Length: 422
Picture 1 (cartoon, rainbow, N blue to C red):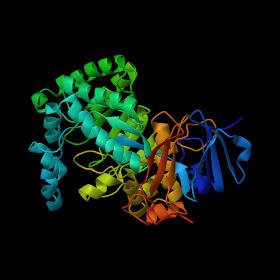
Picture 2 (cartoon, helix red, strand yellow):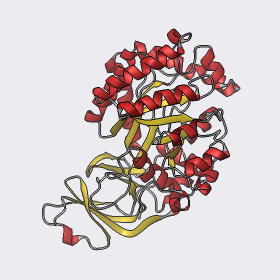
Picture 3 (cartoon, one colour):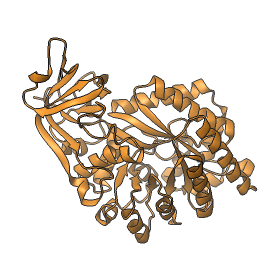
Picture 4 (cartoon, rainbow, N blue to C red):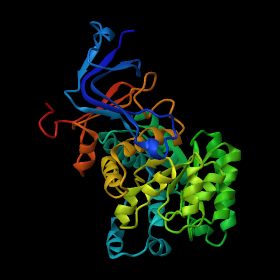
């Protein structure tokens, strides 16, 4: 079979090889090919190899010289809050001063500040702001994200967020997989009627599902936000409706969010900075991904999740940005990976598995993306480095040279950072 596109002279190609979820010690296992090529036809990978690629080309084949760059599967950011209005730099001084997040929330800041801005924003304003973020994410090698609602906390605004995400999924190169998160906080108008808001969330979920606006449902299970029982009620209803559970779990206090995630077979339990040893064991015995968000710990100057304990216990780890206006306002996904190395003490191979195949697994798309394999989408990134270690060592910059989505070049750097790789 003849390829429409061949990317050749790849210095090293590195890809996950294990069937997900990739757990524990297996997260250090990857496949490496030197002087590699990838042959692509109709957006899918048709061949991978080293050296001679000429058997897959004819006079119509487009050849792309990687010039010795490093190739990995393009990155998957499995936890973002993409669509929102406004920003929260006015809270920055309080964060620097160490004011607890829950205290900021109590006085109307935090999520509630963004809720007000999002409710006031028009669909076009939300779309333009989110598109700008998507462009930045793409430039760092991200071609798939999960995007949560949760900054409306009322029917109309939650729907508006999900509709904007659905629109962007069709008009931007990045694939967007949506999560309904009306359970992000209790809105002020329901402060004295928590049961009423839980009922409203469940009612809205049914419409979200009927309109195909989301695949997942998420709850912020945390002290002074949603209780464990409220979380169970909402996510049990989500499963009945046909939405897949996810949980913001054990971020600040250990109140059993991870246990609920395992009990309900959630796709992921996210944050986990305060997870108990008992719940680490439960997660390890499940197929729920422990989705860690080191950017949030960095920005809030809080403890990091104990990735080493989770991996050593046999958990499957994902790494995501938690991109949002309050606790992780950065689209630099490579920085998130660098924090996973420096602060979570994860190896380069563990990080690669976490941001590709395990992320694809908890987003239910591992049959299509997450590794460089014959038959999968040609979602690929070329990086200006000789090896994976360099990407994590040289931090805070963008190493991306080129990004391919479904075999189409969707981003190319204007210049190589070091004048080209020899």
